Amino acid sequence: MLILERKFETDFAFNIWYKRKIMDIKDKLREKQLPVHVAIIMDGNGRWAKQKGNMRIFGHKNGVKAVREVVEAAGEIGIKYLTLYAFSTENWTRPKSEVDALMTLLVTTINTEVDELIKNNVRLKQIGDLKSLPDSVQKKLQEAILRTSHCKGLTLVLALSYSGRSEITNAVAQMVTDAKSGKIAAEDISESLVSSYLYTSEIPDPDLLIRTSGEYRISNFLLWQLAYSEMYFTGTLWPDFRKKDLFEAVLDYQQRERRFGKTGDQISS
Image (cartoon, rainbow, N blue to C red; front, side):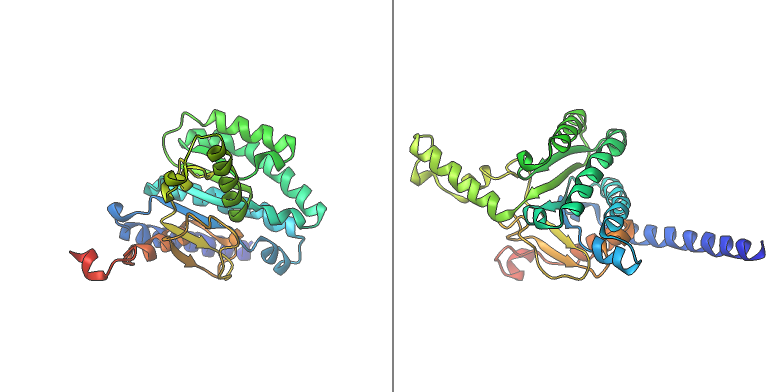
């Protein structure tokens, strides 16, 4: 009993310290310099599970808690768009047992979380090849998108069966089709026109990209949209990523000077 009491006291003290730490970081954030759109490559679920002697799906299941915390944290500080790289087109090549388990987890999570999204005024959107997803996932996803369509707070974008190269390829193919039918002409082609053909046509480009797990690559994610995004890499594995980690990434972002090709003096003036 004494051991349990000491553990309770230690855990209680840690929780108090941790909450204060979160508030300290949050209080340093400047509202006028918040990123409008944060995109996250959620990496490290498999390694996290392996470290604990479990199968990869155990890591994916625990990654859901991180998603919950990050969505809540983003809404708290006023971020408008949060895009999560949940499943790439390349992920289809993983073992069938893992892919099937991921799809089942996705349906379960949507069922569980949609009411909470509505409660927190979060609108859900999806980018990627929706038709390649199992019918059960398509149905639940479309239902959740419809049910949250009236929400006006944070927009949560799930990148599912997504590939940056495929997105650009599909956009070019559609532009060629439209050019042949006379809808657009060669002289109409511009960066803004290309952007209008992408999955993200109604979403601003990310200001900040976060990648977890210590990897330093963008893995075919938002290749067009990340042209001038600030990038933040952390060694934290995704299932361990929490509010504090998001706030630290945003605080780091606010220390940077975004020049968009200009000089520092031009930005200052």
